Image 1 (cartoon, one colour):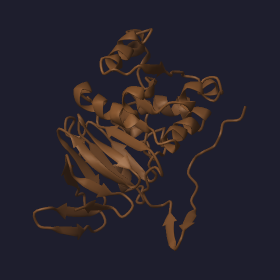
Image 2 (spheres, rainbow, N blue to C red; image 1 turned 45 degrees about the vertical axis):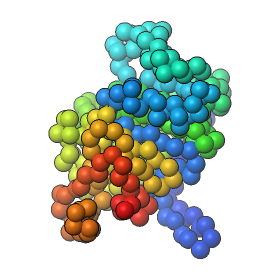
Image 3 (cartoon, rainbow, N blue to C red; image 1 turned 180 degrees about the horizontal axis):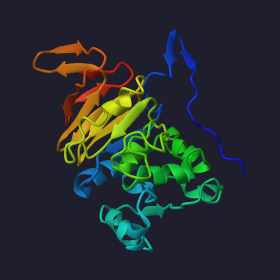
Length: 285
């Protein structure tokens, strides 16, 4: 069976009198994304995930594929992983994992995704998710969960893979920003997503990507901090900050936006409760 191609195409979509170019940053047309910068506290984020997935009726699929083989071997039957979610009264839980894209492209493998209301993408290395699922039936059915109004959540690698450009996707080291894997799942178009931002002093790393891929919006998420994305907008949730790399400098206390000259390495932070419009690349005040 041929792999299904659902990559990006440069085109214009005309809706009424509004022309939207896919060189712009756009979120999902339906459903919700929960994108977390790593070290997500279950006590905070799993109740949010559960609510978005349908509460006690939630039917979730957990994808641990970003993990290393050593890490996976420590929980070979995924009982520890499942118990984490059972503590929050998730009752319908499926683990979906493969290293084989041919298996990921089979109707049998994606059966649980057809009725799922939520997907949780574990952390690890994002290129492992790309190798297994990019442009397969699994990839298509992830979009299907969103189309039905469900939620796709991910932490660390599970956050970055949701973007269109795969930051830190190199198989040699996670310090290489532009590596041998550059394509994400594109649940958000024209964006690069970084994680562990302040905890690992990564807040200047994004410039390597956006200076080479000038069409991209860049965002960086600190640990136990995330964004809830609906349509083209998101709201920040969690303990710390996210960084916005949109070639402006925004200041709440000055109530102003400053356009930056090319080459200026500046960004700004948003905190819990702040909202952002990705399509128009501006803070929602």
